Image 1 (cartoon, rainbow, N blue to C red):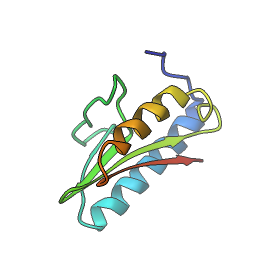
Image 2: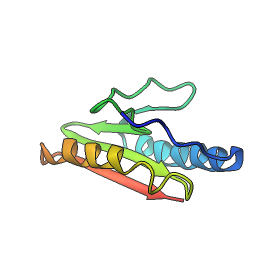
Image 3: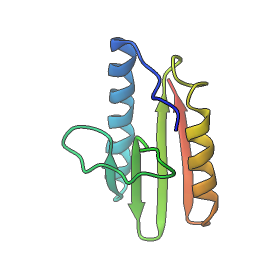
Length: 99
């Protein structure tokens, strides 16, 4: 497993704000959300990686990742793992957002 790339303090703040924005949107749509943020239950590991969030509603499941310009290219192994996991079931999606 690759080490987690470093973000600048400003990049980390922007990342966490974007993750929280996505989490709040999914919650507003009636999804149950686990997020890699304080005050949220942690998402399960997928292939050794923890996604930024997992949103579930019925049989639908969305795995989400937010990347900054510092990490967008460096996390490609993680993104491939999440894409492969999502493809195993029609009800799963992988969403990647670069900020």
